[in-house]
Length: 67
Image (cartoon, rainbow, N blue to C red; front, side, top):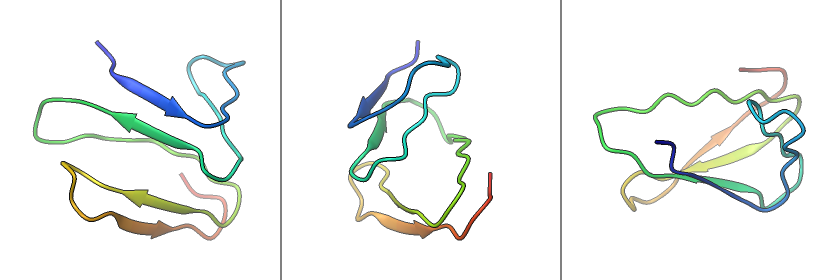
């Protein structure tokens, strides 16, 4: 069972790959386990704040075409 919550503006025209290119968008997920893999495709410079179990967010910065 997927427990993913999309916050902000997302394009769901491809349900297997929701897309967002607007500031303030976020994805929240709840899971039980020892790890989580997330695939993100990025076409420009973006900033991702990642927080696990309520810890202080880690800022990830991208600089172009990256998966």
